[in-house]
Image 1 (cartoon, helix red, strand yellow):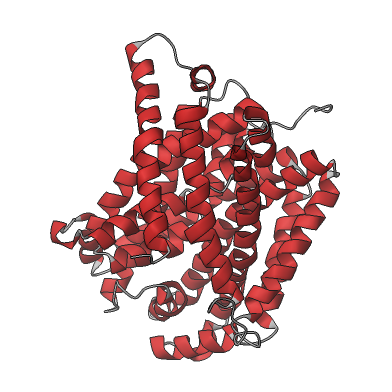
Image 2 (tube, one colour):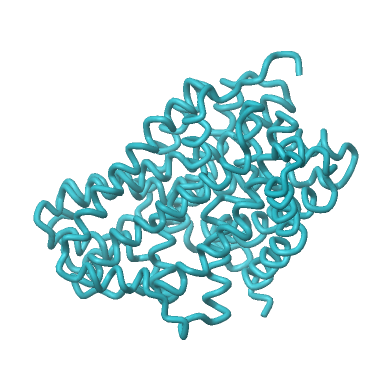
Amino acid sequence: MTEKRAQFATRLGVIATTVGSAVGLGNIWRFPYEAGVHGGGAFLLIDLFFIFVIGVPVICAEFIIGRHTGSNVRGAFKILAPGKAWGVMGYIGIAASLLILSFYSVVAGWTLEYIFQSLSGFSGVHTVEGLHNQFDSFAQSDWRPVMWTLLFLMCNYMILARGVRKGIERMSNILMPLLFLILLVFAVNSLRMPEAMRGLEFLFKPDFSKITPEVLLGGMGQAFFSLSLGLGCLITYSSYFKKETPLVKTAFTTAGLDTLVSILAGVIIFPAVFTFGQEPAAGPKLVFEVLPSIFSNLPGGMIWSTFFFILLFLASLTSTISMSEISIAYFVEEFKMSRAKATRLNIVIAMVFGSLCALSFGCMSGIKIFGFTLFNLFDFLSSNVLLPIGGMITSIFVGWVLDRAILREELGISSSRMSRLTMAVIVFCLRFVAPVCIGLVFIFGLNIF
């Protein structure tokens, strides 16, 4: 490439951006309801296991590809395997990122609606049933979900248009510490609730009788999707790393902080759920129906509810920024677009498909493709098909195909026994463990059995 490529300026920027790409609704929304459905502590234990036997090795694989090539996800595979079929990974990552950005922005838009709902005290509605009807009424309307989706994507645009350092890195350096601060404040408040110990026991005391094949697959899938693996986010972000950035240490830090956010979300939610007699296995409605009911019964509930949905908004924003950067980097480097033009194109595509996804709960709810509404189709294709395939390709390529010299160079492997052991463990997991586990998630995600 003729012009010098952008790089993250600081170590803090590296950590904030990579953790921000992983942390999202999967941690604060999905993890608590998955843990609630699958028995709490047993699910957490399985999730932690797979975070480190699948998550960290695949993060390292994406980091190696991204930093060594200094290119977008499509360009990276063109450099490492020119003329080979491995290049399909680039297209999978770009397609998945646009699909996820489209439907994810709809849910992120809901968090904006609920910030204002919280400020209004949910119009005096405090029961789970009433809040359920209120949510359905909002989601099925034909303009409010679209409005919030477009507004959320405009927030993305204002950050992305400023570039890698002034936009993405600066935003992450501000938003990630703020997100952790809000999480900690909520966690401290939850620990003061009357049934806090019951909530903590549910989350941290594993009942091994709860471990079933379904729980194993649920924990495996949560670990994979929580870290945004197989999408190309971390390939793209690591292409902005400096050569002195320690990849293994950064991978462990990213996985560890991402997991900490999930655990803090559980610490926030389960004490409140038990204190107010709600079901921990409430499922996806936990955040938008059960928690607002709980907040309404707390002193200063309007303030707590508002800040909780601000927290969800911030987590959504850091994730969608990284998804957008996948296609923006591709447009800039493969089609020689200016960053401004590439950013506008990315946001316009997301706005069009995001609006259609938002309407699939309302006036377009009767339009089905293979039995799916557009929102559910985008979710299914990306989460159950493209991401597992992308993760498997990345694991197999780095584990079996990539030159070992590149692995040693990028991982900073020396002649010490510990250094060689680290590389051996990572390669073993990429060759044998990750492909098998991701394959199981893929097969059962398609409901083949």
